[in-house]
Image (cartoon, rainbow, N blue to C red; front, side, top):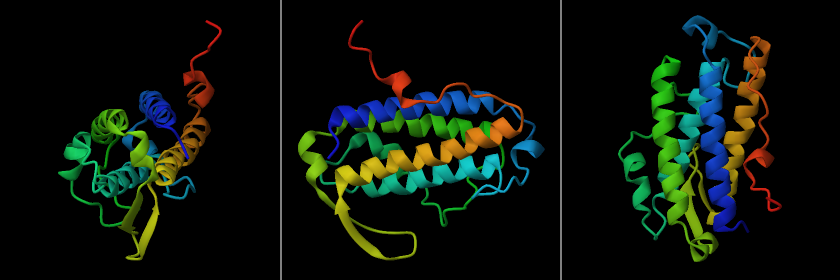
Length: 178
């Protein structure tokens, strides 16, 4: 099971990488939305999917008995109707939402306690199937999902001639020798 410190590290990494990714994604709208054979078509489709997944999972996490006030802004967002739903047709609007989501994620992970991680969370998946899983493991999946699709987004940017630079989590882990 992850520790709260692990989740806070992942939240930090998530915000850092998203900022770098959106700064690098300085493409004309037509290029950002051009079909490139990715799971969600284009760079814009991929970034929309990451935000859609975040909203869906954060809304599920918001029903945890701990209450997590940091997720109040996410509770107010409409639930995306599908995993390929386009929240915004342009990178600038999506980047603004991304910053809001990352801020909520940072604040939320600061509210999680070690006992919270052992909770069994019940939810309904996007196909309407009921599930019950360990909360700590679901949070790990949440961060892994982002990392997986950000990897696709960095590949799409690389194919467009844009280097996002190093992307390793290692860069956010404090060096204990310092």
